[in-house]
Length: 492
Image (cartoon, rainbow, N blue to C red; front, side):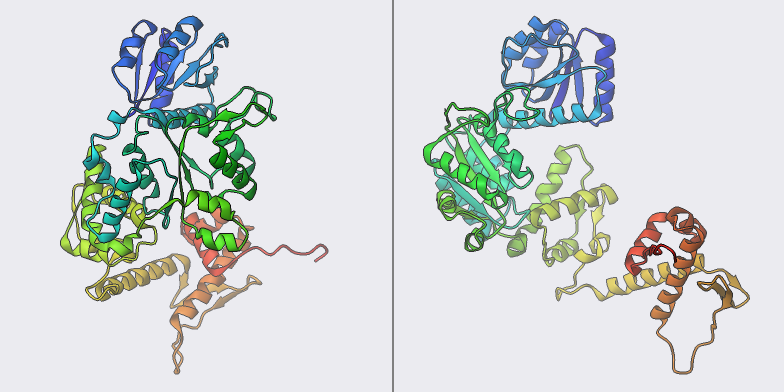
């Protein structure tokens, strides 16, 4: 498990930092400067080391001795005469949440990219634990990984979101001759286009507003290792041109720089989009596609390998146990029901469901009735009739409770008020030809909601109190019935 180490001789500063980090949910340890060399050397899993820069020379010596560990300077300005790639940044008191959170996130990325192999894998068997299953689709993926890992060919991983494309990329890296080098992931769709160039290639000091110092890009950080370009289909066209040049010539320049830099990285790209269709639409360069698509690997959707779900459930439960979370167990009926679901979110959706169930039913055996409704199927692959009856009964009961809370009765007829605030009694006698009850009740509910909002000047919280319901419930009903305030025109 990754921890954060606080190094300082100032007890107050050290204690305050630990309180803040613990509040953020981080595991922390602390030590003094005199003991820090021994403490840091005891573990390679420091997600960040916050070091007091009160004695700059000592702090810089420590930072230099552990190049694989990310450091954050606290409290004092370092000399600035020595440059460290593992010095993520500096924090000065009073420490603010955004700055601390940003530096911790960057430290985590550096830690992930520079962890020694021994802390990640202990052989091929453990590598493939994340590629669980015996289906033909996942077996084919394993074979392709074994074939392409020893060579430096570019790999393009295709598949729907949530199918584990990054897992495949990491397996390729850790089974390759570059396994001792860093694995650096970049989500091309999560970074704005105008910042992506700086993120990939780095920038020189003063290259643009806010560039107060030179910064290495992901290509430099991945030197000797693997650069994983996730969601390559979301990369802007102008960046595709620059990436193509790097792939062809293996050189690049930092933003604002003129010195060409050589790079020795393996490129693995991934996308859930159909790049061939994007080429036809003019949204993706054909020459870049063929550069990346040297060795394609397609990850199968979970619905195509439903037989692997029992093994996946076992693996996900084991991960919960390893993370000190409360596990759950599944009956055969519940597993069979899960195997009939379509899984649009694939393995990621399954993982989220297992974690949710571990919270709702800790240390219990999960049967089909414990599953959310959309995961409950009968032997014909249809939603169980019993489940539908229970859900319908629950829904109707909720409607009755809501209506009871909404309506104020006088005698046998509910009293409502029309838009002119004139009291009127609703006729509760059933017409001879019948009535559509749901429409009738919906109209009545809409009428009362509008009245409450008008009376409370459209202050939702006060209207909810008047109607005897939660504010969030009222907001949902307003969205459901498309109730919105219409502003009156001037002079009306």
